[in-house]
Amino acid sequence: MATTTQQAALVETSKRLAAFQAVKDHLLPEYTRIGIGSGSTVVYVVEAISALGPAVTSRMAFYPTGSQSEELIEAAGLNLQYISKLPAGQQLDVAFDGADEVDDDLNLIKGGGACLWQEKIVAASAKRFVCVADFRKLSPRLGTAWKKGIPIEVLPMAAPRVLDELARMGSQNPRVRPGLPGKAGAIVTDNGMWMIDAPFAPLLLPKDVEDGSETGSGTNSVWTVDALADRLIKIPGVAEIGLFYGKNGLEVAAGAQKPVAAYF
Ligand code: 5RP
Figure 1 (spheres, protein in one colour):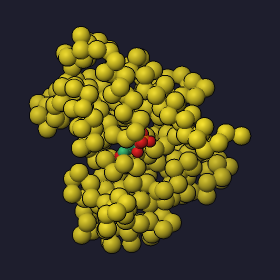
Figure 2 (figure 1 turned 45 degrees about the vertical axis):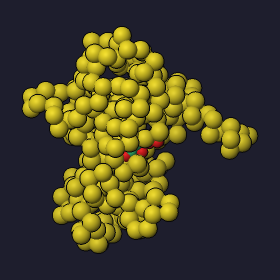
Figure 3 (figure 1 turned 90 degrees about the vertical axis):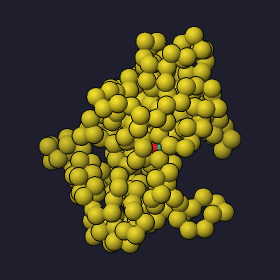
Figure 4 (figure 1 turned 180 degrees about the horizontal axis):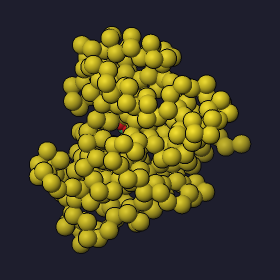
């Protein structure tokens, strides 16, 4: 039986292996515009990119998804650029980001670090989106492994109304995310918004509905990923949601699962 320390070390090893493998497979030397997501796994992505050395990286520009990845890019001495300055009609070659959970169809829950809005903009601006995830993040249905709820970025004045609507939709105990330890009140995102975390029963996939096996999935859910995402984004006051799925135009690059690492 692994101790807590051994388990934590295994997770870090898995993140690092996944990040180095993802960069090796998906950062082509001819690429010039790279999106850099947020979270602890992305720290290893930047480490792997830096390890390529200036001969490769000096020809590249790196686009952050918020203040955390902005600091990461700068600290690594990489060339920082902003998505707001990327001219219309142009795209990033690739964007790397982490996830809180990944389902069988490679739909993602993101936003555990409160950066989802800019993450989705950067991901949708890239020709290719590479999600780097350790073994804990994989589950058949979203909401199985990540139990804190779907992160939803909201206009603060709308938060009570959004909470009411989420409860009507069947979310169990949706709540405004508190500030970081030592900070009173709600967490405030890089965009001046609040976060709501909305737990739902694990979300169905089209195959569950098509073959009538939604009861067999054991989730008691009434929501597919697509249907829930379509409904959530229409609630007045919701700025963006932490469901990343096919309709966002994201290409998730599927790769082999390693014993202690998985990357997509
Ligand atoms: C932040 C995110 C992160 O990518 C997600 O929370 C995963 O973080 P970590 O790599 O630390 O597990 O979506 O908004």
